[in-house]
Amino acid sequence: MLLTGGPGTGKTTVIKGLISIFKSLDLAVALAAPTGRAAKRLSESTSCEAKTIHRLLEYSGEEGSGMRF
Image: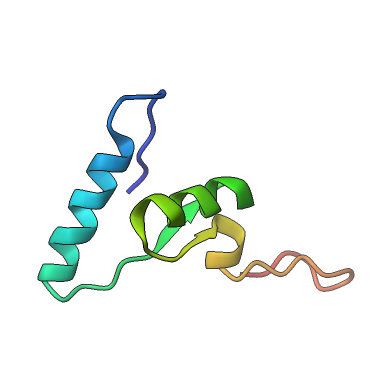
């Protein structure tokens, strides 16, 4: 799921609600953000680990190896 919206539209509230529902159903949750700063802010506001999209997908763009996930 991708959640977008401007400031003050309730993104954090929706995320916290979804995390609560998923945890009550004993489901795993992975939070991702486009930048390191956004991931840090997401972690702080939800008290759950958040990663950048590249780190979550384990992106490896090393020289000569091409793009790998």
